[in-house]
Image 1 (cartoon, one colour):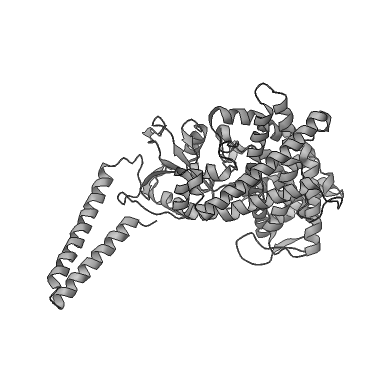
Image 2 (image 1 turned 90 degrees about the horizontal axis):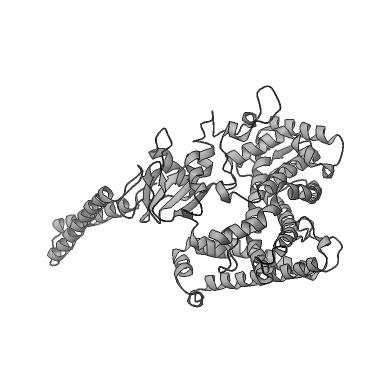
Length: 531
């Protein structure tokens, strides 16, 4: 990371100095005026440099770090923050503080520090309000991902049970069915040009089936019975809108600070003057309308026949909320469930597909582990089809689970998370974190470079196995895992995601005697399953 302010001051000095030299060598009628201008530029630059140094001395910085005046330094992406942290921290992995675009930032990579901050949410920290508006289809009714206070507690009590161990085990046959379709699809293609995209179709099917009870079969591109279904058409439109909002509207806003400022500070009717924001609002309104319609239809069906409820998130949540009529009126139920559909999709589709791709990439890069895991899966199956796997069978896949855990450690689903301090009463390592401070939590850096493990940046599943045995070590014996966050707001769908990762890897390994990379490209985009 290079100081932005230092670059600008250096350029101003060079321009002023060059103009003075030019006039001294080639005097002209306007030379005196130009010399005065050059002198003012040089003097102004010197004043700025002195003011910047003085600001760094007087300004409050809770921890050591780079100093570059009021404007501060630049850091591009997670890797930029990781590099800055490595340059300025000490042996105890002390946090680093600096200014980025004029805002005080604290960069944290120690697991205990990160856990302390995560536990302090939402009392002492909040998310970026711009992302809250973007993530929620209706900002007036925040979902569980962005809600705070009592509204978050109410939603957490309602939605968390739908992702408990019992319900996830009940979803296992559906996940196995999708895995069987994945094997068939990959077997027909022979070569998968983009494994991540294929896996995303599979995880999308799982998420929509698990969340809404909607069987869409995007991976097969056909309905189960071939008959048109009005609700299916609505779900397809919903998925298209979610994808457009995530991959089109959001990047425009993130890259353009003016769009973000308009979204945050201006009334909606004024912000609509921007075509990008107008499109975002239109898509969000349509998403909210469709989800409320789907939820209302299912709510009416469950009222008529409660016994028809399935083990998906929608049905289980509706049953829970309908049983608490005093606290959850019908209108609140529809809006609360609809507000979370976008969250479930965005949090459960892309992330799981990315992680599955990394697992297969690592198994291809380490053929000895691929062979060990394949032998383990086939030993558990004993000639049976992969769809016959049970939850007890999955518990026997110790070596494959070690590979999944190690991939989550080296390639966490979220590399970093930015939180903003609320109030002035939170202290970290005895230092006060002022209100409004941006706190960057480096999950990947914490689990690799700062993990304290031998060769922590290397992928080695053996560290998860007890020496001389095939028993899995306890997570806390290896390292503090932050792949799914932590504290009271730990990822609600963690158990479902872990089940998907294990099943998809087991399915691909059991179906093909060898899976290898097409290219040496380190990105997990191209895999070649050769039956």
